[in-house]
Length: 375
Image (cartoon, rainbow, N blue to C red; front, side, top):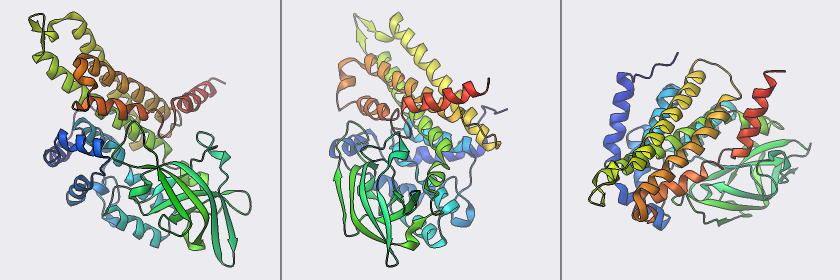
């Protein structure tokens, strides 16, 4: 069973991350949030440190690590206040390893040196969010080319990545994926302003008879859903790790604050209700760790479980936001201001319950799977 004691290698990795993150204090992340500034400076340092290819094979320049260590690293970025939503590029590279051509893999790796997302994922549409089979974007072959028309919505990072992997209905009525250059004629985008994740874009992407090559197809023809679903379990554990990191960040800041903030002549840490909140926050964080690292350990052991990652995401994103909400309460009025990073964490963490699968979809996927075990 999984051991909770960190290995020497894990400690060294996290210490290296901590040293690098000292270069990016809280006011840097505040600036990124307030000005909707993409953290290019931070990502350049990630590349310099080799962190951008963690979890990937050595033959493509990566640093192989197990899933448990990977989740530790992602959570630590969050604990240090960093942009955990930009920590998912290795999943795109894994997709390219599984389904891309050699040329596509090289392009994806080259893009990874310049930005934290090698390509955007274009599956959601106005009528097709959780119902992924309701997409209507069409890909029509004509004269040796492919022409794509449709509208994609809530496409994360589209302004800061060169291509979008567009899920399209092909000539046979099946779903096929194409890598579409986002600067191609016929592509227009509108940035959506949202309550959280402000340092990264989320866009409406309009495709008007956009011409691509047949060689831009990503994965087998008609097997687009299979490609999209390959990393769903890992992705949901990643989001749980992001939620854990932000919960720890808010918890630690609130604990420091209540020990120095005085009301009625004594620190508010001495009040029983504060102590109750502290205990409940601690327990939530410990339970999040237990579930997350068990899920990662299962992956490392090759244990296929189509229930657990969904359950982990559901629990960790909800309980993580509750921890941050309690931290905001402990901070009082200052916790609701833009000068306090907890307000940013609170906004960002609420979105974890939507991205990568809503609470309702997690309940459906995990609950249905659990009930099947007793048939």
